[in-house]
Length: 194
Image (tube, rainbow, N blue to C red; front, side):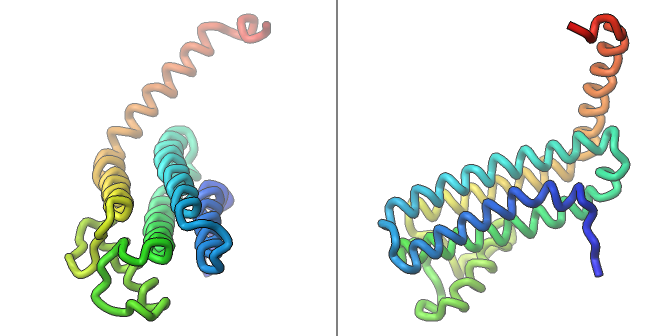
């Protein structure tokens, strides 16, 4: 059984919580407890929060690899789980958006099958994130296009900008870490008390 270290679990809890908020919005829409425009607006806010947190968490984790062997050792696990959370999150967002606005996406099949729709949106999300998607499922509204574009951008940022430049990012963070240590050492113990 895979046992995740506390540092990985802690880093992913908030992101999983944001996915939970998306699920709550889905339930609100499913039982028509709120107006579609309100649910769509809240969904956009939750998505913006997920994007901000994901970028912050990934860069923060890489920064911590400079002085923490635990973070360096579990970097691959953290990145893999982050990618899975992003794909899952967007699949649920697409599904929720399709429930709010049925014409938001062109689906090749399963228009009346909720499970088939959900699996189709996982397919769309995985294809969009990896940039290997096809044209069987695509957004037909501006809001749907914004969602797909944001997933493309976060997929690009995660895979190309972060993973491909990991060594360079670690070098930059290491240099900043050393500068900070040198500045603290130059101030000395007397300068640290105010």
